[in-house]
Length: 158
Image (cartoon, rainbow, N blue to C red; front, side):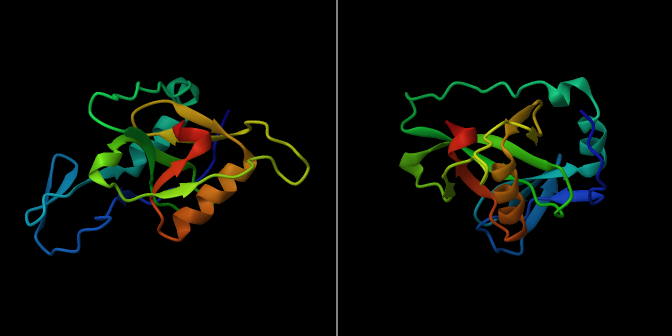
């Protein structure tokens, strides 16, 4: 599988809720000194190179949810990009007892013709990719342009 696109030079995940001015960068992470919120910075050139490796097309290895911590679920942190860029995400575990902010996306993933085949891919920054349907791909591309980033997507997070 080969993907052709030209991503931006650097992808920076800006604070999803933090709007403080005292943000500092350390080891590829941005930290707010006021509230402690941390967000990642990703080098798009390394992501581009990764797309063309066999590891990128390997299935993402899901980690088990830890129910001892509380009511843990997976959410997708959707990285920003242009419409034609490959989809990149980080799949994170969050505890519902901590009231995480996320948007839920769930509906019939088959297209108008009933095709629900997994012909698209979303790449995970920690390795592997998740196969998704054409409709799921379209929804994620649309949401990424609207600035919606933390998502619970039933086709990915369950």
